[in-house]
Length: 218
Ligand SMILES: NC(=O)c1ccc[n+]([C@@H]2O[C@H](COP(=O)([O-])OP(=O)(O)OC[C@H]3O[C@@H](n4cnc5c(N)ncnc54)[C@H](OP(=O)(O)O)[C@@H]3O)[C@@H](O)[C@H]2O)c1
View 1 (tube, rainbow, N blue to C red):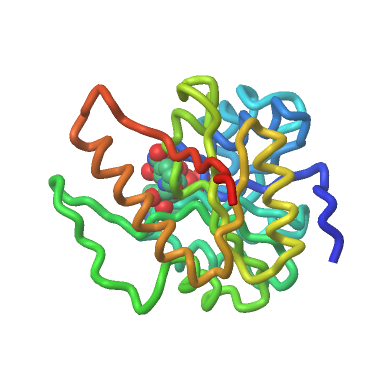
View 2: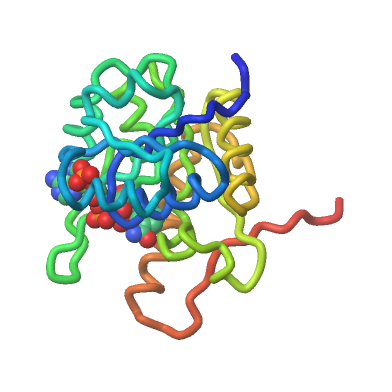
């Protein structure tokens, strides 16, 4: 399969991560298609205007027909119904930013998953080419990589080499470094890294961090 990055990139979800990715992708020259429960709402139309002239929005059912690459940036409690609403995703590259966390009054309420969120999403969309990516970085830094004190690594995991190559190109196009940590089963580790970051951010400390993996000498 070609690793070429198509010009129109889908972003599923218009919250903190979706908006950050969309705006950043548009700045890098991609046209952005937001997939939303409410594509015609004033909020989503305003996000399209903020993203740029080539941005548009579509429903969850209609969006996948317009692009081959979809960032998945939806709250975990609605992940399954959102995947179902998008229909058959066979052949689509699905870049999954999910962290399987739900907080109620500060307490985490997600029970243990049978595997990682990345693998669970793959089971809900068996024909999709799922790549775990962007779950280890705060939305504010996704929007503005310069907020970090240096280079930021986006670790990626997946079972489709060409899909991971496309992910790498997109990651580099919007100002980050990519590091392939291996198969989709390694999503569990990336989700633990995401939870560690969330835990530190929830402590409201002045010394929050971003992940940067640096190569080591042999
Ligand atoms: N926030 C971060 O810094 C961060 C960083 C890395 C990863 N993540 C992960 O990325 C995913 C998205 O996080 P987020 O912070 O962007 O979440 P968010 O701002 O709370 O919202 C994400 C989007 O989910 C969609 N959604 C679909 N069904 C929903 C429902 N029933 N209730 C509420 N929203 C619904 C909404 O888009 P529409 O209204 O357009 O449908 C909403 O804007 C999560 O899995 C999160 O753990 C977050």
